[in-house]
Length: 88
Image 1 (tube, one colour):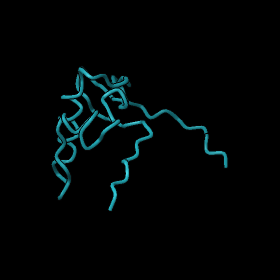
Image 2 (tube, rainbow, N blue to C red):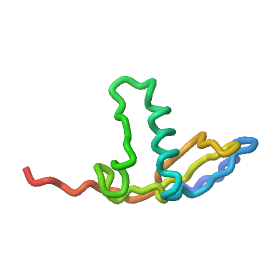
Image 3 (cartoon, rainbow, N blue to C red):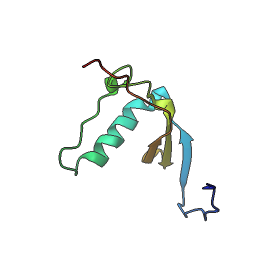
Image 4 (spheres, rainbow, N blue to C red):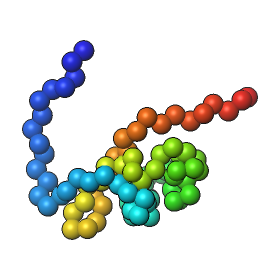
């Protein structure tokens, strides 16, 4: 099935898309927590969760960030990430 459909670019003046970096991890975590704050029962993320914690294999460099005036305004993680099965 062909899913590569043409799309119009959404206007987002002043927004730049960039790849995340380890030096931005604290900003990424703060952004994710800010977005989740209003949702009931949503998790609170910590820097230790990424890379080797509960999200082992998912690091700052796996994120694409929408940045406006030096502030993260959007984020998406792009990686193949699978949690190893724990023996029952």
